[in-house]
Length: 132
Image 1 (cartoon, rainbow, N blue to C red):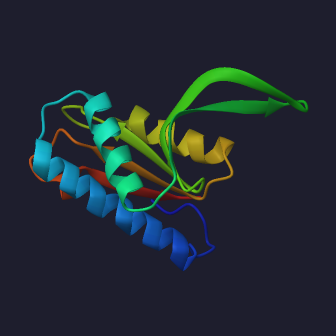
Image 2 (tube, rainbow, N blue to C red):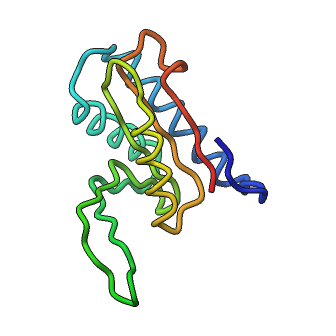
C-alpha cells in the first residue's frame, strides 16, 4: 500500500528486496506453524549475515507537546535504521495488523514497512509492503 506520492529511493527498494529474499529463505527452511519470535530471530540472523544492521524489539514512543512518551509500541525489526519489519505467525492477517504497521510508519521517521505473515504455505502470499 503506497500512501505517499513521492517515490521510494532505490536503496530502500534494495533493502526491501533483501528482506523479502531473506524471509523466503527462512520460511523455506522452517515452514509455517512456528511462533513469531522464532521467525524474528532467524530473519534477524539471516539479515545480519547479509551485512545489514538489525535491531529487534525497538521501542517507539510518541512525541506529544514536545515530550517523548513511551506508550509500549515495539517494532519487531528495524533494518538499517530505515525499514520497519512487522512479523506475524497468524492464521490470517487482520485489519488491525495493517493499522499497526501504518501507525509505526506514521510515528517513526521510516518511509517503508513490510508486514510478513509466516503462517502461510507460500511466503509470497504473506508479504505486504507499505510506503509513507
